[in-house]
Image 1 (cartoon, one colour):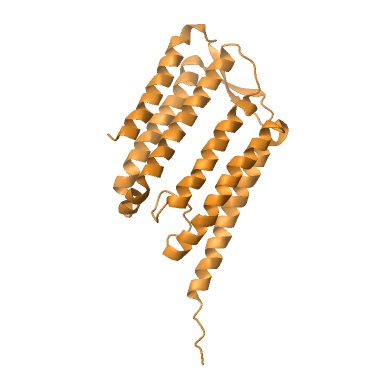
Image 2 (cartoon, one colour):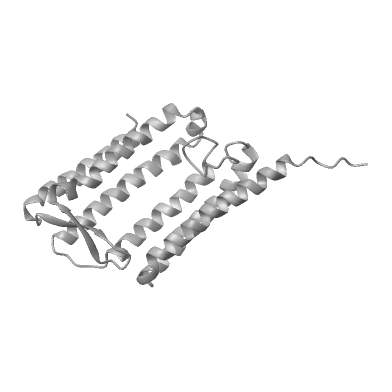
Length: 217
């Protein structure tokens, strides 16, 4: 295993260890889901509430480890492997953070869950922008539309702007600290806008390639 993979595994083990440490102090039914207003609207039995994020983390880590090996363009992932591995570690740390916040809430600490999660989302979104800036064409990581996958030029142009948009999304999401009531809708709205933009922009750029250039007389 690579150093970053061992670190990610260590984060998962640490998250599990902390959960086990407080296991007997937690209620049998734990709050496990909050709505857009930060109000609890879902519960899980204690065991599953504590196991959920670590299990998801292990599955994702396994997937992230496999991707470079099974991607037909895996050699391109090696070209931005440093950014890729940092992203994987951030995702695992983000899930561990959610687990710890959930644990704290169920131990009786009351706080605005949304405001505690916003900075974590901001860091993750911003780093996605960093990752996209360095991403080379592959089948799993990046803005993958039929047109970016079909053209190196379209991939590069789409990812240059996409990187800036995700960084802007990370910074803009911090507004949720000031306006928590609209924090979730702010993030979802920005994310949807980026998805739509990615499809439209990459399609338009690809069509430009297909148009025959007019010969100069």
